[in-house]
Length: 395
Ligand code: PLP
Image (cartoon, rainbow, N blue to C red; front, side, top):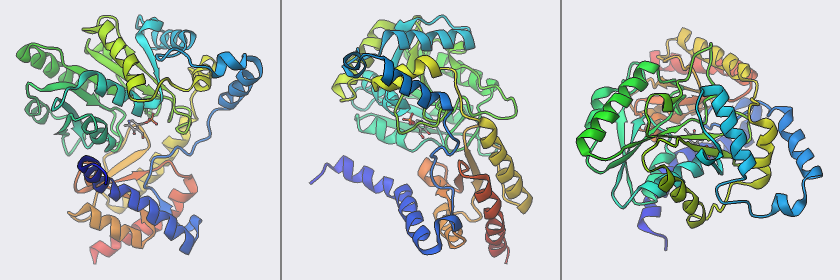
């Protein structure tokens, strides 16, 4: 009934969906509080109070027809100006409202960009392990996603695999830092390396190659670590941002794309993104959520709660002998499975009622991802189960 493309993509998606469904079944049997569900990345820190307060105020004060009517496809000009002002203050950029397109979160932004740039069989490189939905975003538009494996010891981009991933069909590179699934924050040195190679490849192929910086976890970085602002390092960068994680509102769907005026083909790109909003059926980012940003553009969840979770889980697992690379951001810990087959390891973990996502689902075989956006108490109570799991492999 459905297209071959969709059938294949449903098969690939089964893995994560299965874990999620399995979790619900286990919760019915053993009680929700006894399941250590580290499988999905749904924020668990409360949104800042100003989010609800400002929405209520807007609903009380704005004229309903103006608030609920169609805004421009690209977004309300005052909201776009507010985002530009925030970015200029924070990163010393020189955006105006014309550089900002409001989107229904980062997912929509990445699809809009893919639709704007890709012809059939055009290629998008991304550093793997990567957020598994990138493949569907690109391939549903008949493009091809090409993974460039990160260094397995540091989880930072690797110059050799990156260089080898280019062809003359490469149009875009997706970079995601802080990273899902690894929690790695790419260092300034890594970013410079990536940008140098991009410039080299632009020269070699004689056309622009755009770097798409997908940064929904930008605010979630720990221990004072700096997340480099990528447009400072590479002119042809499109920044994709989302408030899903920074404000704990993934159900509300709000984010933006920022494109500098000096990016090659700036006017055409903004026109393409705007048209794609209509063609792909997004039409515009939700109007109430856009207006909310007039008050909340610089708000943030209490990031220290995630940092506390990170410390407890990382230190707990490392002390038991799990091989973990300390994540500096996002809310994911990516660690080596205790056997080669990461799916089998996840099945063993499930016997201890620990739910993990296999690294293979993110193009990172041999690893597993633990999402620590759960309560501190769940992590504390999960540690003995992780210990039993380790013991079962040492027998
Ligand atoms: N990019 C990455 C790396 C993500 O982890 C996610 C969601 O988890 C998204 C994009 C999509 O986020 P949004 O809710 O803003 O669409």
